[in-house]
Length: 353
Length: 283
Image (cartoon, rainbow over all chains, first blue to last red; front, side, top):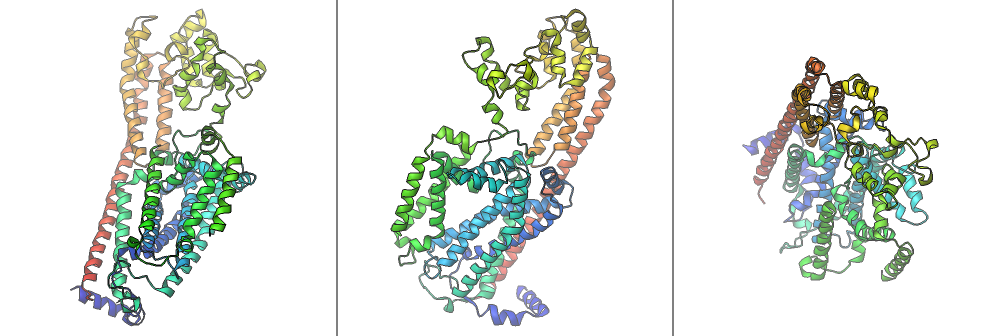
């Protein structure tokens, strides 16, 4: 039955030749698992963000007097505006999760090793840009939560002696978070970041296409890509399956976890004269936030984080030993577990501190 | 690489030690610096009243105020008492608008600077007339207190408080007249809080409730039970209108849940189809 449907659809669209010619020729290594599909899921997530963002742009007004109200109109007046906004919010969080999972899987499979160092660097850059996307988008609703979370984050550069205040003032467009900050973050979110993100995605995909997918390191057979399965239908269907799983998770979260994404302070208009008692950054910034809190010297705290981010970005150039199985590298494996545990511990600590 | 890392660590270590600070200062100046809350940090009134130079009976005033409804709504010392909270030496200068503590007969005007509608109703009431004619009637602080002022509720009318000056009968009639409307307002307040917790914005409904509550509580200050009963229908109509909007919002939440559940099931179904389709291909 399924075969008949498939054949009928193939004939109608007339794409069999294309599939036969290109997608079947491109081979993926045997034993590729769902972790290999996280890249395409990230790309689909970004596309949904772009489309939902365009619709939100129609109604959103980037001005302190209107921003909060326009968001409420999107949520309560615009037909299905709530769905587009909730998708935008939920997917922004999931994008961070997926990119992190993607990087973790690449790390565990040691797939960043020569000649794929630049693919890793591009991937980490995409994570950083996604975080800047989240940060800049966070201020746009002009709620208490967004105003004060941005206040905390834009205070971070003041840790640097001499130039720190200037950096913070350039970010905010003044001494404090104001309408000018809103305009700047809005422009960053909708005009500056998307082309940068897409360029790096293009570069990343180009590198993946050029070098092919890495063979799974734990596969005893150890075939090369040339001996593997055709991309279509074997790998493409795996990707489509994961995209369906991704959307199922998105709608599960919209249905059952809405209060997690829109908390009370996110539903209260921004008031620069009223500091909320407990304001904390989003979950993905909790670890750096907690690190700032436990390191008494703020300059050292910021510098350490920049250093850690630089090491993360350039990791393939630091770790150049041969070998593709992390389980045969106990020190590296222990280091990975330690970093992961520290990040999780700081996140939980930040949440409940 | 070590030639690169070592100087970097040395530079950070030197700069960090040059920039050393204490954790308390770090948290105050860096993570929690807030321009709106700055008033609390440099408030001469609070600093002085919390210190030992103040008479013991006045030292607890800042703590009482911090537990009050005024504090929750950012009403500061100088909003009522005037003066300059930023300048300790001039904080109690009359040139800077300091009015200090009012005499009992002046208290209604003192509070009425902000609570205009209530002042008008109070002055027309038996309480107000008595204070104006004899200087001895109950004023605002008699019922509401002075610094630990709580959100007004029907509980303020109680036998203990009212019988300090007169019998409880009339007050009880008034309390009964207020009872249903007050309960309805409480119920709506909790429903709005529930909606907000579910991610719905209820700003317009909250404002409507606030204005209804304010008018209703202002009306009470006439201490005219007949007038309260006459206008109860009008207040109930306004509250019912808010109630209807709450029900609409609850229906909307219900629809949204159903719709996103449908989409979730749709994608789960598509996932199953794609999963089965992939099984039809053999190695």
